[in-house]
Image 1 (cartoon, one colour):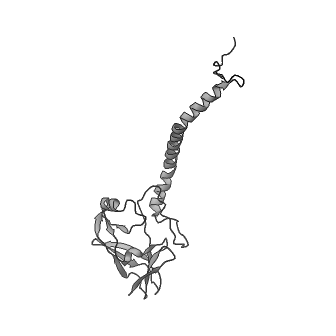
Image 2 (cartoon, rainbow, N blue to C red):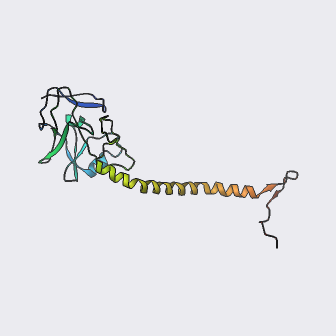
Image 3 (cartoon, one colour):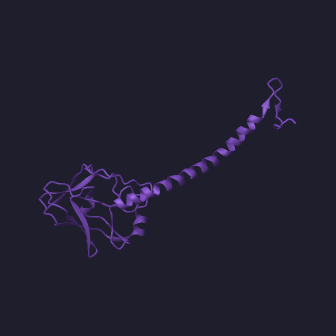
Length: 194
């Protein structure tokens, strides 16, 4: 079985098979150094793209360096992943024809709150993001609280920024200049007549 990289309609480069693959075949291992999540966060803090694969222990990731790192996400994939003795394997979910792009569901479970992780698979039933359904539900539940907190913070920041301007405008409204003499006049505060 041969695998090649070429341009993908899903995203950048994709991994394609040059021969048919039978269902349940272990196709390729997701290879690379095993590093801590903390180290990965430090290494890729400002990176636009990473090839990290989370391990079952929840503390380590594989920093992908092999051909499997180029297998794109799909909401309706033809492969799945499984961790066997600390190794990540890409396994055929169904029979795959020669020339077909290999895909699996990334099921992302973490990321910055503002990271949409948009999906471009174009499959019927696409959920629009590479996050797992559970993560999307969690984010949807948290969104109103996050939006409300951001709105309050924005209003406070704007209020603080505009306060000096508002004070100057209020003072300017109270001051008037006599158009003939140029003398500034500060009117007395309004008092009700008795």
